Amino acid sequence: MNYFEKANILYGKKDYKRALALYKKAIEFKDNEAAALYNSAVCLIKLKEYENAILLLKSAINLKQDSRYFFNLGYCYAMLNNKKKALLYFNTAWSLDNSDDDCEKAINMIIHSIRKKAI
Image (cartoon, rainbow, N blue to C red):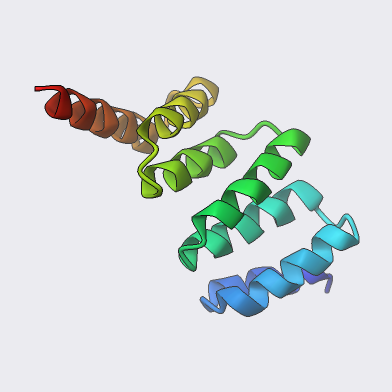
């Protein structure tokens, strides 16, 4: 079993800190690198370390254009109250997978909050 697979098991047990350490090893050894970067970022999101998650998500996106990567990037920016960047990344995610209802909900929620603030 490789580092990535072991990290996934720990993630499934909600042991995000230990999973993160193994995902970092997987990244170091280029073991499923894009997914390991993404999963590391998700661990950081679970630990509410949004700025660090953003860095890893951007690295993952450089390797693979995946709607989930952009969605979670939007989520991080939303948690940091940067609505413009959140909206940009949610829209990018939705353009890659317009069947994703969560993207549509997130976009509508941000637009609604911006309009409400403008009133």
